[in-house]
Length: 220
Image 1: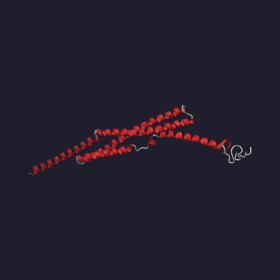
Image 2: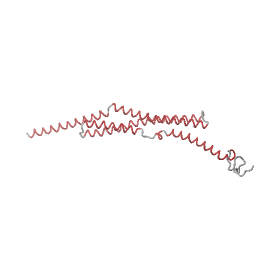
Image 3: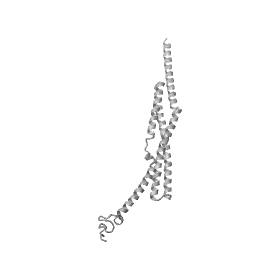
Image 4: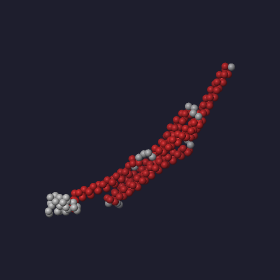
């Protein structure tokens, strides 16, 4: 009698363990299936492309501004058609290519970050599966985790500052503005220095040579 009871208890324990292992296997398979779904792989690709497109769009906007500023700056300087225009155009083209590469890198990084976040979520759920969580609960949490990760990935993918990424375009714009400011400063300084001689009404008591404000030569 005692031996039969012991065997029954052992059989029950063995069956319970088999059931537990089967539950773990089912939950693990469910997790891996959800995270390996081709639809999720497509979302990685879409996030990468959307992110690249976002930065490329801003790159094109900044490029348009840089092209316009460069055109005006060269025209004001009388450098249209010269070597300076060629040099600036080459620099602008190089900066644009760098911007395209940066936009592509942002896209790749966004997809990689999402994959990493998914892998962290997968490992967390695999731990829950090992602890005996049922397949239904695991599946629900997996779906929620994927959704939250995607939303977070989409939000952070375009959070970088484009001014830092495309600083060369800002440099070209600033150089254009600096040249304009320098020319204006030269013109302004010329007018201040020579206005007593050539500026109409520039003397304190009248213009031309007759004003007493011209270095004490009033009366000539």
